[in-house]
Image 1 (cartoon, one colour):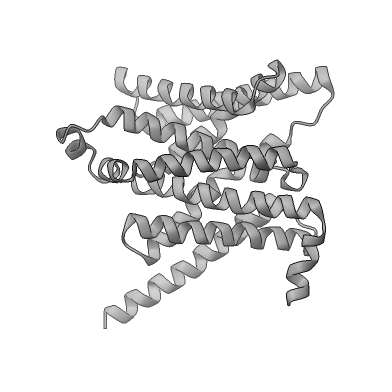
Image 2 (tube, helix red, strand yellow):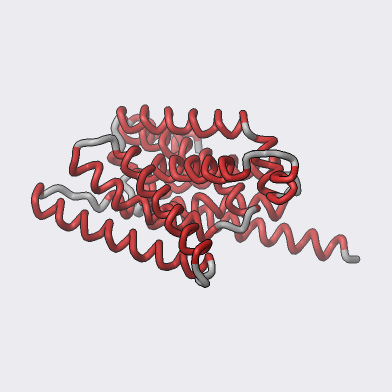
Length: 277
């Protein structure tokens, strides 16, 4: 068993990939917990797709990808809020329009860039964690530290806002700033995860570990901690499955996370039957 665990670590690309998997599993589970308790899972999906045109534009202009992704994700969120607040269109409809529009724009931009530069940018869509460089790992580490530090500093405020936004506003908290701050942190978590699972699958890492933890524990801090543990477990296990069974790493990570959710459902229903007796 020990040999099975240590064998992949003799390769530098697997060391970097596992490091990236741990970081991504941690930060996505923490930020996804907020999306889940606010019932904003669809918004997480929207942002994960909306960053694509920003990433493609930043790549074409030689700018940091995080800058393009952040601008694109925040712009899409702002447009969704504007449509919701100034028309009869409901939020879920506005989200669907925003998701499809920004994702289509991102696909077109990637196609145009590939025609000009003859470079494969599909890893933005599907991830390429095995191709992670030391610079990628360093950049992701900085993003994760920034996101987790912000969550730690604003934990009480975000907790109040997440469960009772009207009460938070009445108490004098800057709810609009908290909302936009949360969206920025979610966008940064998505940017950190793009190289691992791509924008198409990142929602699974944002939501599934936190949802599994939510079945098993009650308090938000417990959901975040347990979800982070489950996210890291799913990411590392998915990498080992990818190594030994020659599977795509991103989908492997997502399927392990889904399997853990299935186990969580089993434990939850077993507990419900036991307490109902």
